[in-house]
Structure formats: structure tokens, C-alpha cells
Length: 170
Image 1: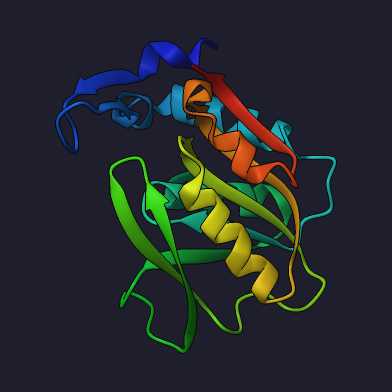
Image 2 (image 1 turned 90 degrees about the vertical axis):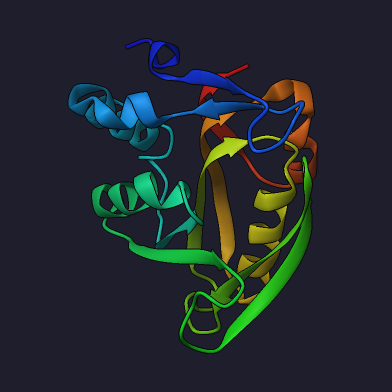
């Protein structure tokens, strides 16, 4: 399936000069959604995974599906103040600003094998921050998975210590 036909460009979102890759058309199509979940699973299916970490907010769409298919737990990484239990945090630079992410302190046990999943790999700051959080808790990152990789932004360079996989590359 050509997933790119289900991704639309939205110019000047979230601010002027940014071309946002909107996956909403893919999510609205049941067969495309199922095919994308299956294809993301195939990118990692032969790996032993204990936890799938999904990044706020679009990473929450496929990460639980992947966790279910892998027989793993799902761990949400959220923006500051959204998790109810004790957390650790990591700040990072975005393509268009800065932000901070948090994870529960008991979300990952020492030595657990972790798959990091988000919808888009752009400049790599978000994924790098998530990897730092996982490592801080003692997790071992098996792979970083994305629906879309914007290669021209060179974000994979920030993840050079980990395998990176994506369904679509621009």
C-alpha cells in the first residue's frame, strides 16, 4: 500500500514556513490504518520488546497497537504536567521552538527492551529526548519507529546510537 497517498501537506502549520505532514486521512481510512499498523509491526516483529513508548500525542495512535501486536506494555511520554504520578523530564529543541517531555519514574524497569514510536521524525529533538528518558530509567532502546521520516531535516543524526525505521521517507 502506498501510504503517502494518505498523508497531506498543510502549509504554515503550526507556524509560518512549516509544512506539516498530516496523517489524519490515513487514520480516517480503516484499511489504511490497519495496513499501517501491520507495516509498522513488520519493521520490528523479530525483536524482543518489553515496552513500547509512544510520544504525545500522535505517537499514542500506533504505539498501543504495536504494543498489543508485540505482547508488550505501552508507556506514554507526555508533555509537562499531564502525567499523574512522579515523573522525570527532559527538555529539547523542536523545528519551531522548545518543549519538555515527561515519563513516569516506574514506567520502565532496568534492562527492559524498549521500542520508541512517534508519528514523524523531523529534527530528531523529540525522539532524542524520549531516548534520554528511557535510558535514564534503565531501558535498552531496541529501535526508534516512525510513520514518517523527514530525511532532509537530518533528525536521524540525533539517534545515531539506535536503529531507526520508518514507513515513509521524504
